[in-house]
Image (cartoon, rainbow, N blue to C red; front, side, top):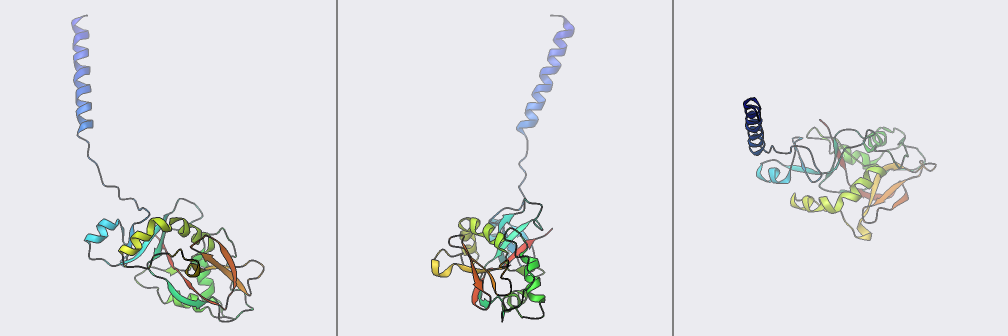
Length: 221
């Protein structure tokens, strides 16, 4: 082996040593991406429970879905810590309240506004939700499709709801039915969908009946 080749191998060996040393000295940076079970506080901040626990902030909701679909608004959804007491979807029947009636649409926010804005009939349910609009966050009644997401996440988020002083999502047959904001296609003047957070079933229900609801919040940038 010539002297020139020996020098070349020596340079390559030094370079490899430097690269390996650099890799060994890498730093781990915290993962700041929003995740399911993160806590939404009244000032609009989203953080891991451990961070929330060390803060002086007030929790209002728990993240149950991180947006990975183009048809969804915002970055994800958080579920309110408490139920809304039973209210009627509408104070009378005979009027369509202009929801999409789409069982696959993530449009609870638009539906809730439609319920609130219908002039020919009042929605005690939507009015109760609008009374919650404070802290700069707009809670609304989830659509059927959004309730499906909540149903599949309930076992993961329930421990965090409890830690934050909220009411866990129930499994009991007699306590698991909630209003969605979706009217029944073809019967929208009289019925809307209830959703079972115990089984994942849906049931068309006369809109004058009082049932509870579980508001959600869209996480925006």
